[in-house]
Length: 311
Image 1: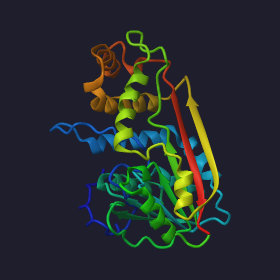
Image 2: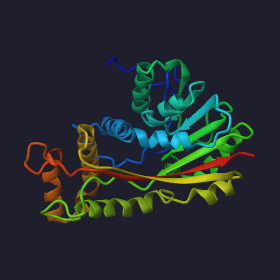
Image 3: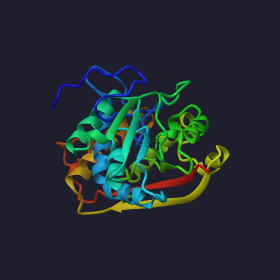
Image 4: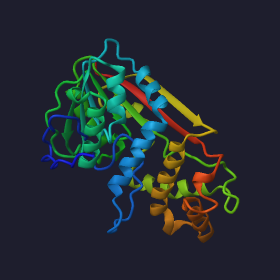
């Protein structure tokens, strides 16, 4: 891997390849179950890996969403707000081969990963990377896009309604905004698993969902009224449900392992001792109860998308 270049100054476009903009949180996917910081852990690297695995495992899901977009004429200028490591950016480039994407995020490591991916795909000349904080008083120059893509990023903002109004000002007349929300992190285990603590995964999610309700009040919101209030016309809404069952790929095992590890770090203090012990057995890759040894892993997730037009 090439050495990571020096990060650009905030609100300064990257050159020559793609970069991301996060709000105060993580864009592209809502897998921000942050580790407690210690000397041996790099939480940003862990999240980058989860985002990359999500893109690999759920590629068909993302392609279905980009294929659904009611764009009319194919856009040539696209803006990806809170792009993460670039799953949406690359999917949009594939969907619209004549387009260029400005990818915005606040995390340098994610932008660096996107730069590498774009170069590997031979698309680095079609991606402009911008590091920016979407909660900042002003946004950098982002052009006049014909399509804006915001996947699991707007709910991280302190004032998402203000961001929607800013997007409307940016959009070319007749342009489209696509807002994608997740119903939470995917589920991987059967409801009666593991044997020592049936229903463990749902209890783990309940702990973190309760925390997110307080910290991220717009997570999982109905964005229709918010879009209308910001001056958009909502043209369509679609909910996609995905279930990938057995036999699963090796990537699904790593996806489950990485995701549940991250969730453990946030929820450990609130789990019952028996649940924590059962979870640790699942996460022990050398043990007999390891997630990686289970043949019944699946991926169950849901995403809702809104397509809103600037008149």
